[in-house]
Image (cartoon, rainbow, N blue to C red; front, side):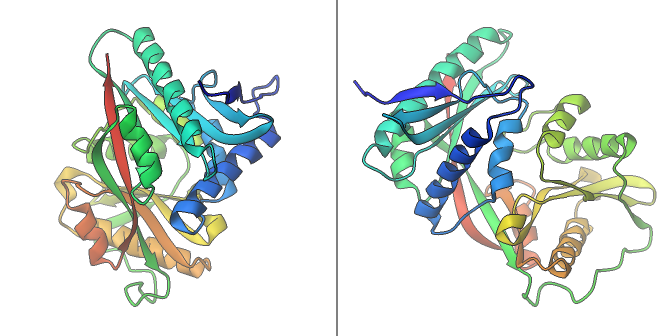
Length: 323
């Protein structure tokens, strides 16, 4: 039996996470990325935003200790609407890394069983996890605990010096307008197009506006000036949501890009992407990134490649049903 121990994250009376615990967790996440990728994947603010997720299971999420040393962190999310439990274990290389991964996954699966038991008894419940494709050690731990690989997701990027990045902001075609307004009415329109454009995507869960907005507004990296709603002849047609999650590593990030079904094939996605590339280049960013389902049925990968983006790394998604 392992002699590793756990303790929950500490919070102040107002619910604010303890800064020291946040710093420790961020360090562990970044050490894992450095060990597998050879570079930092996200900044402090992006990693710390995990504490702000409204679905975070604060009781189940823990730090894992070897004596007094924190050697891993386990984040658990309880997505009741999606009927999913997300399990993330970050254990940097070390003599007890696999042991910590095993313990973290056991904690996550036990939490998933509790979530399933507490949820309305309608439909399946799924435990989900992800690992960099290059992280063969963590992948082996996931498989050993009953997770199966289900879907691959790409991180794609274009360098700001690429000839594919326009010299100036591409003009809007006739009849096309860009709405940039951080008010509730505009956000509700963005929510509607986002929900419609992702309706057929893998593991998409349609959410009411309040739940959707609670997720997007929880973190600290949202960029209101980069929340773009595109209209065609006065009809809402596409959205592009930018955020600052990669600012600390010098890049811009397209957090969401969606085009309503009836407006696909008109080049709207490419238009929004090119405008984001120019915006980030002019801000001094080295490049622009986004994430995409590698098996996306709308041909998104081909669209991104058509504007000069290239796959830089991949994440393998895993899941297992919880009875």
